[in-house]
Amino acid sequence: MTQYYNIMATKKEITINTRLNEADHKEMRKKADTYFRGNMSALVRCASLKYSEEVQLSYPNNNLTNILEAVLKQVRKIGTNHNQAVRCVNEKMKMSPLAFLPSDLRPFNEFTEQLKTVENMLRYLHNMIKE
Image 1 (cartoon, rainbow, N blue to C red):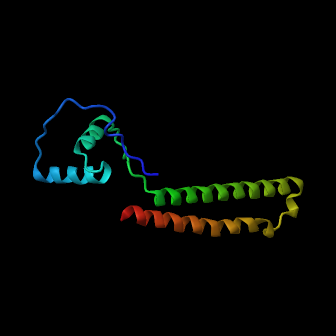
Image 2: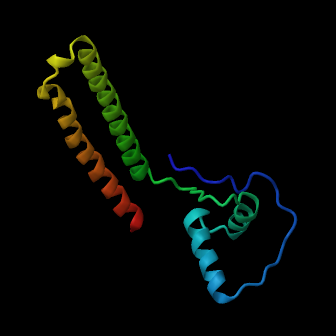
Image 3: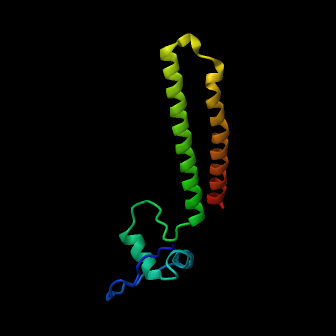
């Protein structure tokens, strides 16, 4: 499901010439190859017309997206479980504060393992992005 910018949507009739040094030209060529299938005009149009100081990827990394979705799902699951455990403890404390036992805190120990899983997933994402 790769998405590309629609670079040939309308006929382009105006030409703009730009002077560059060799280093800038090389960098622009590399970005055009990476994000616009080598189309320098599309790179310049995107940089000047769509610039919003935010990174805009035209080729989403599906692996990265899938891992992020899995991390978010895991975090939501932990949040739901945490809320249920807290609600249960609160209800028990309302009914009989003296009946509260250390074993009532056992569900919170499960969160430690779930958080370790999330931590490992985030570490993997960090290393993936860093490369």
